[in-house]
Length: 164
Image (tube, rainbow, N blue to C red; front, side):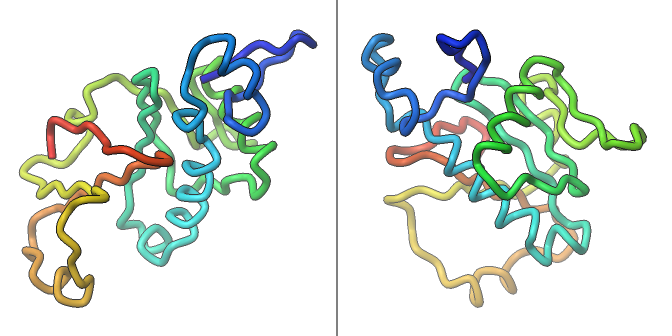
């Protein structure tokens, strides 16, 4: 969520830098954790699965904004630069590569199910869900059916998905 600072610039609302603003707006600071999404994006975009072209990434914000992330995006390594990129995206609705040919980040229309492959098996991660061993789980997946994993980039609580 972008917030306008006293200096007139925009920043990404987070629990570390805007504690006073959370109190003023009566918001729970633990719900403003874009740093978790940043770390998850770093891990996902650097993964062998993404490098092989088998990963599609979407982000849904607390304000229900749906963002498509390109597999070609090189996410900024510092959180401050990541925040600036997200603010730019939320204002312009699209981030293009320097050469202008590829769209790296784009705000897309909801619901997310319109962007998922048809007949996909959808799995959601939850704190109180059943723990599975990945070495047993992956071979049991069907070969010709797409698989979707829903991960929550939140400090605590459950993700609310009505399609999983």
